[in-house]
Length: 156
Image 1 (spheres, helix red, strand yellow):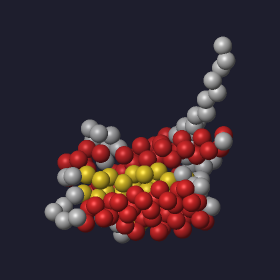
Image 2 (tube, one colour):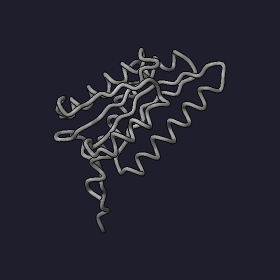
Image 3 (cartoon, one colour):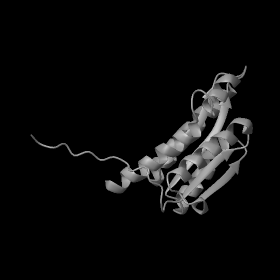
């Protein structure tokens, strides 16, 4: 029987450089996402000296900053963290959609993994749950996805 070749990402961040782009808006949640991302990367052998946190006003501003960071080629991966909570107006939809499209486009255009850690929740309770309580920490999840993607791309 033939063996199926499988390519998987090794979850070891040793020697890699990461930028963490974090929105200031809704910082109560975003700071917890940042903590989760940093903790994950350090626990997976990232050198804290190879982590750079960049603060931006909000989710809408993230794609421009991520694009500049990706084009610099200084980072092996970028983790984008923010929180957009639905309100009474369509503002939520515009911000969440444009941020998501922008980050996806940049990753493809620049060939740099961008971890998507933008909470898009209907209410504060959901944001609390996803920033480190019963639904886990989506900042850590975004860091894990970034790391695994880097390691998969190295093998292709």
